[in-house]
Amino acid sequence: MDKLRKQELKTPDQIWQASRSLMDWMTNQITVIIIVIAVIFGAIVGGVYLNQSTKRKEGEAQYQYSLAKAQFEQWKLQTGDERSKTEAELTKLLGELESKWGNSNANGLAGLMRSELALSKKNSEEAIKALEAYVNALPKNSKDLGWMPLAGAYEQASQFDKAAATYESIAQNKDSTFAPSALMGKARNLRLAGKIDEAVKTYQDFLDRYPASTEIATVRGLLAETLEAKK
Image (cartoon, rainbow, N blue to C red; front, top):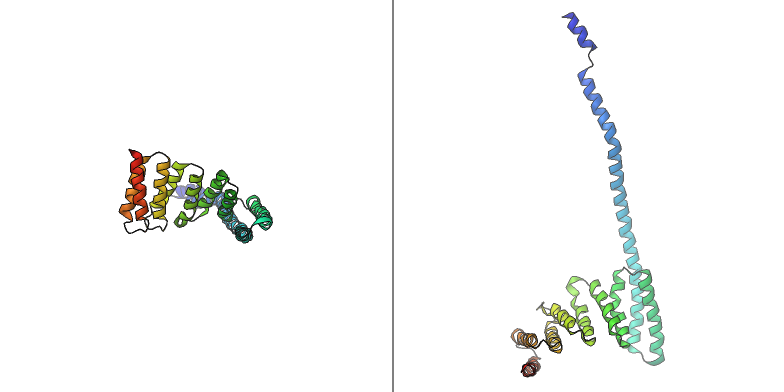
C-alpha cells in the first residue's frame, strides 16, 4: 500500500496537467482572438470613415449641383450673348461636378441639365446618355420623371423601339399621372416602328383604361388612322 502511494506521488497530477493544457490552449488562442478583434475594429472604423467621407463628398457635390442649377434656370430664360455667357459658366460647373464628384448622386441628377443643353444643340445621342444617368440617379418611386424625357429623346433620335419600351415602363403604373400620355407615346412609336398590330392594341388599351380622358376623341381618331394604315 505504501509502495503504491509512493508511485502515485511520482505520477504527474492529472488536474494540473489538464489546467496546464487549458492555459496553453488559451494562450495560443489569445493571439487569434486579438487579431480577430483588431480586424473587426478596423472594419468598423473603416466603415464609419468611409460613410462619413461619402456623405461629405455628396454634400460637396450637392453644393456644386445647386450652383449649376442656378445658372441653368437663368440660361432657360435668356437669349443671345447673355445666354451664351451663362451657358459657358454652366458648362464649366457641370464639368467640375463630373470630374470631381463623378460617382455622386448629384452628378447623376445633373443629367437632366446636360440633356437640355445637348438637345439645344440637336445632339440627341448626348441627351440620351445624360438622361439615362439621370434616371439611374432617381429614387425608384420617381423614375417616371426621367423616363418621360428619355422616351422623348429616344423618339427624337428615331429609336422607336426603345422609346416604346420606355413609355411602357411608365404606362405599367396605372396610378402614374404620366400613364395616359405614356400609353399614347407607346402606341405612336410602335406605329413609327411599323408594328401596326401592337399600336392598334395599345390604342384600344387606352380606350379601355381611360374612357373619361379628355384625349379620348384624339385616340379614337389615331386608332382609325392606324387601322386604315393596316389595310
